[in-house]
Image (cartoon, rainbow, N blue to C red):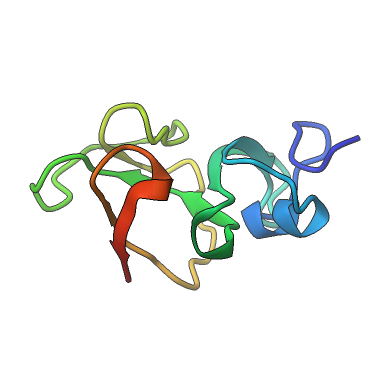
Length: 109
């Protein structure tokens, strides 16, 4: 079994990457210490990877986007995801890119 599948969710994206250093960017199942696994997009490449994408904005409007309980797709519509529930967030990173590809990140903080 591969960590990150519905029946074998990782704790978070970094847990999946730590168990499979060849993991690619994409959707994985994580549990964040909860009983029910949640589907999330994991960035496994930027700055050594292991990041959960929980918001996506593709214009200069400052985060004036809706929140839904669906996982965020970096190639989908702009929005926040509330699917992660009460998960503690230790760090928020903002990336600015010239395209929809993570590899084209021009700045992050």
